[in-house]
Image 1 (cartoon, helix red, strand yellow):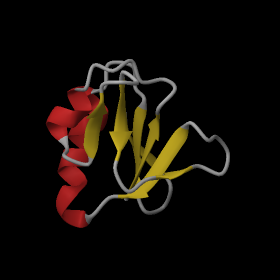
Image 2 (image 1 turned 90 degrees about the vertical axis):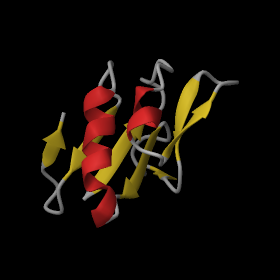
Image 3 (image 1 turned 45 degrees about the horizontal axis):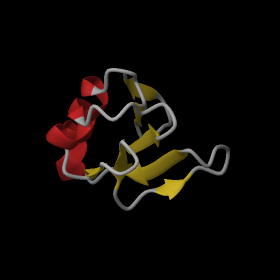
Image 4 (image 1 turned 60 degrees about the vertical axis):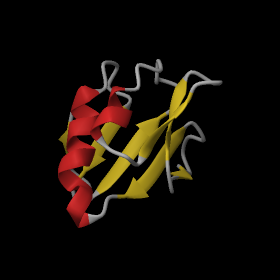
Length: 83
């Protein structure tokens, strides 16, 4: 499973931070940060990382909690499962 986070779309509500500890607050920028993520090859504002098996539920909750759908979760076959 992988997660993609669009930092440009983020409005800094930080609801993802409450759901999964891989998200951290960057209050100076007013955006969340996805720890251990790499910028996407297609868009430098989109950050991607693999989700450890034990964190899959938390990652899904973080994506669902985002009010602007800046977070998407994909299964191992590349199918979007959240939102």
